[in-house]
Length: 538
Image (tube, rainbow, N blue to C red; front, side, top):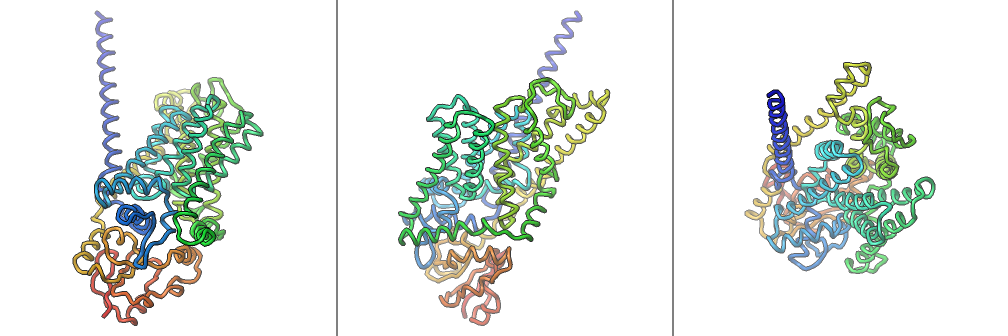
């Protein structure tokens, strides 16, 4: 009788556990769907970068050309090299099937966001284990410094580039010593598509692959093909796209196209300003970067990676048994070391040479989630409240209570940013760019020449917009971040004598249309809506 009662209790407990896990999985799924899809066209509001990128698939569908456009004609650089064809072509396909629109474009991006999230989860599962994979993915989605959800809901290159990179690393690391030549070629193709998608990834990924090859020569001692084939194919994929861009996408000579390409890609990659270095460090040493835990986690992870491999059951750092530690495997240690170098290279470039816009540290911060997770997994007995409580009640009080405190810190890392992000998505007002597009369609003739530096308007309506020259964009970067010559002194919009001037967030930020020049040239304010001011010539 006692045995029967006990077995019934076990079965009831098991059923409760199954239902609890199902409820948790359902809740997490609903939350992720909310983050990805809810209020998709209004949050985040469309802006300069997304608007300029959207010109290319719109031009491809409506004019049959892979180019940007302005009132004077086609422009073959700028957004065509800012984000690769891996983004532009699927969006163009969506436009061809379902019409040109913001929803059609952003749904494609959400698919890339889902792919990036899934592949990063699988990569962390391979490297860190099941519990750690869920933690790393949660950090990836909600950490403000990473900002994956916001980037991934827009037509930007970060999420698609991360998806290709994570896919390449996943295939590479899973197959590793057993990889056949065609699998290594596929690794190179995926990594190559990553840098074609987001050019800034080339600096980080290229240096990482070179250093990985060097580490193999010195320490790993694995077959050279394991590193040479992916690196060569990655370079070949990027080089082939560059050659196509230089030869076929520009009407000028190859030399002129190359000069334009260099000008565009050099914009914010080599600044070297002490003030910006301090600002960049401040961004990384802040609450938005894993609640100030980024550098402690990277330091701890470096120590763990450099320690000799252990196959025993006790970890010297905490005293907890870590039989399933990923660092007990030499292969996992080598693979994590490669990703660690990627993180360090990206963060070092971001601090030393970039304009300190946190978006430039995106890929390094995305993979930093692995090392923040590794640190917490080590110091919290693989996120086990039970084992930490047992340790606190025994002779390991410091480790036990310290681990419980770290779990509370980790929960705060999730809950506070997730609540903030959810609130922003749920309460986002209608995008004022879309509202301004309605005003333009109702009150401005399609034949009127409209001067603006808000390229999203050229996607949302079919008016004759004229934008400042593309090469001026890099001057704005140096104006804003380095205090150099204002763009209003380099560009005079009155030479074109436009009928209207539309000022939005970006034009106001760089002050390309000074109010005093507008007034002196006979323009009067006729419409104000959100960020926008529409001026008409008297």
